Amino acid sequence: MTDSPLLIVEDDGAVRHIRLNRPEKLNAVDPLQHERIGRAFLAADADPDVRAIAFSGVGRAFCAGDDLGADSRSWPERMQSRLVDLDLGLGPALLLETAGWVRHVGKPTVALMHGAALGSGYDYSLSCDFRLATADVNYGDPRIHRAMWAAEGWSYKLVRQVDQSAVTPIAYLGERMDGERAFKYGLVHKVYPAGSDLLEASRPFLAALAELDADAYRETKRAILAGLDLGFEASLR
Image (cartoon, rainbow, N blue to C red; front, side, top):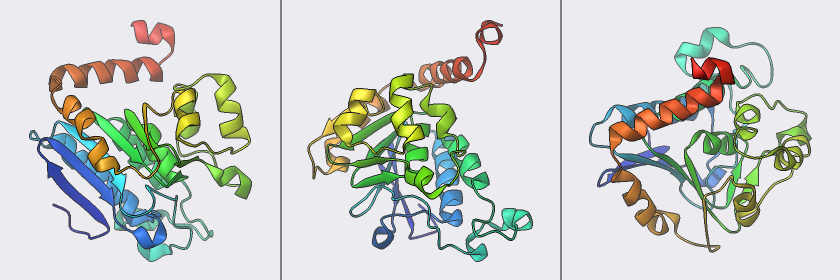
């Protein structure tokens, strides 16, 4: 169900699985992969047979972050005219867009995180409705230690999901979390033992999501996101 072996898209009943498949790179994401991810979520949202979406990675990690070695040939054609002569090209522009697509999908979205969930993997996970993780996951954003941006959207989403005392070490210090710590902060909704097969372990949770009324879920999610994205007075209007 996908035109690239680097992204596996397959269905388990009413659950659409979108799986990063670059295990030799710990599923590091180059620009074309960002495009594939975003469009796979949009396609799943438009498919009436899909009732829930799970996002995971093949091999030892969910996603180790961006592939910083990617060159201009790995950028989508529609973005080529916007490339600039910098080592990091467009910077976070593409990820901002595709993570936004993921966030506004109207169906239940679940990130299944094991191994490493860093950088852009962290960004995408915060765009999902639910996050399930193994106890030993390495979770967070180390980019501040490389003097890189915190502009992919997680700095906006994080403060709307946890309290300020948790934001400070994660955002300002780049501290990473394991599954238990992320659960304590409220960033992870369920933790499984280290080494668990999350595809199998999460099946009951995903099946329950797939049974929810699709219209009610979409409208509830739309209302919640609108409330988060607007000020109080504007949200009342």
